[in-house]
Image: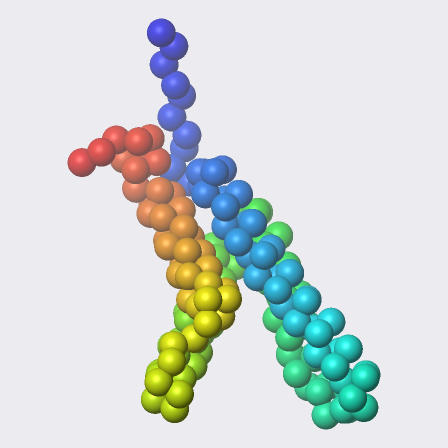
Length: 146
């Protein structure tokens, strides 16, 4: 039986990295779809000048996520921190929306907003934190359990 070589502690698990990549690309895709949606609504209703700031912010967020995905693939610690901070902002905004929805309409957010604004960002935060833990602890990196 062959022994497996242990990865060095600074190499993240490629499986976790792939999952984080897919989740972030999914968020960027949602952002680009939102840009197209707002753009079409603005064109057909004649309110494009009013919606231009929303378009610019959403497009900027989607492009920023794509840039951060590339940086995370290069193992950038700074990019990981930016992604975690951004995801925390998304989760906090979703929690405010949830509280307002419960107070004003006595109904929670729908399934899609809950998945895209709570579940997906929390999943990214947990996976990035797990990658960081594996990088900093040699015992975790080689699979030794305490």
